[in-house]
Length: 452
Ligand SMILES: Nc1nc2c(c(=O)[nH]1)N(C=O)[C@@H](CNc1ccc(C(=O)N[C@@H](CCC(=O)O)C(=O)O)cc1)CN2
Ligand SMILES: Nc1nc2c(ncn2[C@@H]2O[C@H](COP(=O)(O)OP(=O)(O)OP(=O)(O)O)[C@@H](O)[C@H]2O)c(=O)[nH]1
Ligand SMILES: [Mg+2]
Image (cartoon, rainbow, N blue to C red; front, side, top):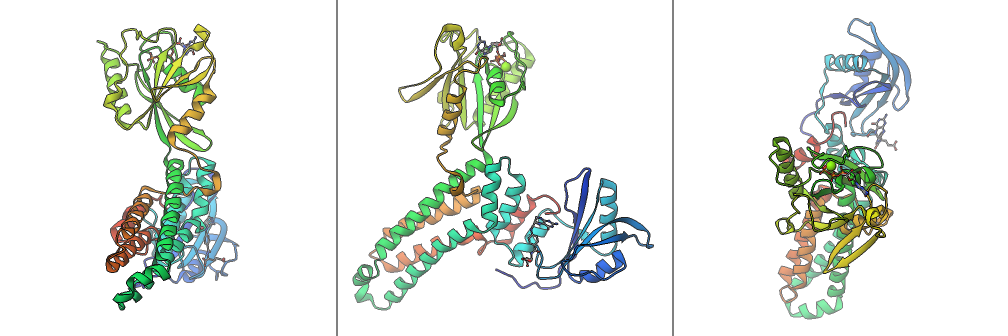
């Protein structure tokens, strides 16, 4: 929703391309009256939305660089304000000189996310779309990027609007009936209020489920490899990563520091953490490493508890993980080194606990392990359906669903029924930014990179 601006906005500028050297670099400027700004910079009048080859001039008319200038006249721009882009040669020094020139012409340095924030405030994007801009830039897998693009195009927002509209329709009916109390019961029948409420609930549940999948796609899972020394944790990390990342030796106590490697399975980022083997030791360095293992275990979503197939009970002075200390953490027991005792790769389940038999060194049973990781992660979605949600969206969806469920319990008190529907709609409005406080916007946009 566009908001009226009190006074003309400052002109902001930033280098929009990544730091470092590249073929082309872009300085972006947004504000009011930028045609004059462009004239000072190039010595000629810019043509809206035409990329013109020009020289970019310094204060004394000396050339800083030559490149393309694009002038987007408000409101037809990314931010909805006048925007100019200086597309110059992509070196850090020349980019900084172009930026300094813009600052000298009256622009100030943009804050992180400020261009996108202005796009939001000018009604070019809603809040969920603005967030998806950052998610797209940060996406660590192609699947996550595709989901972010769908949100950017407004698919997620549209679904939220549809549910919100259904809530409003139902509420209007209820409020109309409030004036005729004797007809309340009739109303519920005639307006098919209950089936309509049930349908809204189902839609919300569906969106929430797909959003949970998206949250997984967005942030991934922490998978911690833990167990006694020498059971093959580092070998398993290397096998999952497909390259030699961790040092592997036959010496117990090789890994000292936790090592983190992000892999992906079907587009889900998994942050696999190799840790120091657990045992009582007098070695100072190793003790600190083991302390770190325990910290990683506390942050884990999934623990792969490794055991040596040849010596299942025995831990070479090592200690096993105390699962009781890790409530809510999924644990998969991985029996490693099956090649040494003629076992086949397998997935075995007893007492609800899953055990996988693998050989990290020979690469046996690794596919089973990958599948199992997806299963415990709760991944069951198919590409198109996933909504790349943030924690903020999940909270709002859950709260909206709770209000819709409460409404179902309030059929004998229509005022309360209507109030729950109103609250549910309000929570959904938070997602698209219709009811967002300034401090929330501050938090969201400050996490963007500069120039975005
Ligand atoms: N050079 C360049 N590439 C870029 C961007 C940019 O700002 N500059 N973008 C920055 O993120 C993204 C593209 N996003 C954009 C979104 C809207 C408009 C824009 O001019 N919108 C106008 C006109 C639309 C039209 O003609 O159909 C508008 O919305 O009114 C431009 C870029 C990615 N690529
Ligand atoms: N035969 C066989 N040997 C393995 C297998 N996995 C690991 N090993 C060997 O076991 C030894 C220890 O492997 P690592 O991966 O370093 O074990 P770790 O659990 O990381 O050990 P620490 O870092 O000391 O805690 C190495 O000699 C590996 O080659 C396997 O599947 N089969
Ligand atoms: Mg190791």
